[in-house]
Length: 251
Length: 251
Image 1: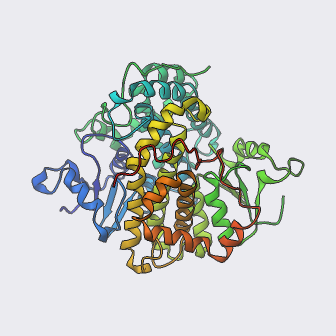
Image 2: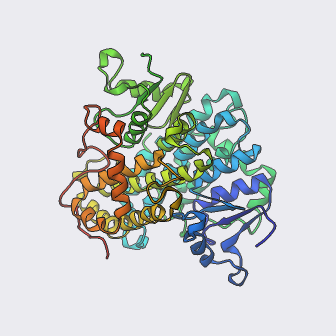
């Protein structure tokens, strides 16, 4: 399909979990094709995702994002990031930190799943509007208990990481986990501006990390390009004003 | 604390996510201490988990299970299993299958999270009895759509895996992912006996895999021992008869 070393298969109109892979590929700076965002007549569109999902020769995969690197096909976001990190030092300079990075990445994955379930507590297959009352309850519990727990945890990890002078989550320098920290804290600020503002004062190191990641040359160029799909009410981080601060973080 | 090479820190009275690590350690056959199940005066109990969670020198961890191997501390179930697989060939004989195994393991993790949320759709911090009505709705969606989707996916992975003669999920032989398949399908049969019975005829290879794993000598010895915590209504797989088959799998 192209000379690019990587093909990414992910829903074309949302950031979703695939955004963590897009950010990693952008930071690496190698070419990649965001296949489903190509025109259907060029092999793109959602049908391209269905084809790779059902391809028994590629091992069958449960859900996008899916990364194809020649003969190798990898899915599940954290597995893709770990795979890319074994090939590109910029994503994880110290291989001895692999399981630490994976642990933190999986904790961000849990965090994102809980954010998703604030607007879909009953059924992923139904609309938000069909589960609004339950969403209100779940979001109150999330903002009251879980958001502060996750945020304070990652802030403590940063604070304790003296090897990086409190600048990075894993080891002495930048890693793909910092990209995920950027994405999650940008998403929280979009989805829950009031709750995030209330949380913000207790996570100064994380907010600083988010801003430093956004200023990295390749990330910054990406964020300013049309390749970055905007946040919207179709993704994981949705801004429904009626949900924001329904519970409010406990002080 | 002991001469065993591994210490596992996990809630002492439930199987939970930690059960996947217990099964792996049992299959490896090296000694391990299930620390929180030891008497408090011997350094066990829930306080032991709190101590290791908050230990900045061990890198801070978000939640159990936590595995300590000398100077190394690993958390997040899938990361622990990947770590153990790099040290013990029995858990993954072919290192080239690492990301395939990780992908399937993370898909089981997603499956288990959705099972958990059937009885806790609103707040992990509240009792089931406080969210029974929402649990009924979420379980109906889970049993109607998600359970068959996950089960049929793993059945297809087994069916396509001719390298193992359809006997194992990853590569040509046994791996830790088969242990997770055993645990998940045992748990489903416990929690949702009616729904699982209805699903059973479409997943003959998975049911056979579950039974073959249970018959492995070390697994079988473990399951017959007091080290195996029984299923209960405190874990992930809970049997609430009022939830079973509320939706029923779509044929």
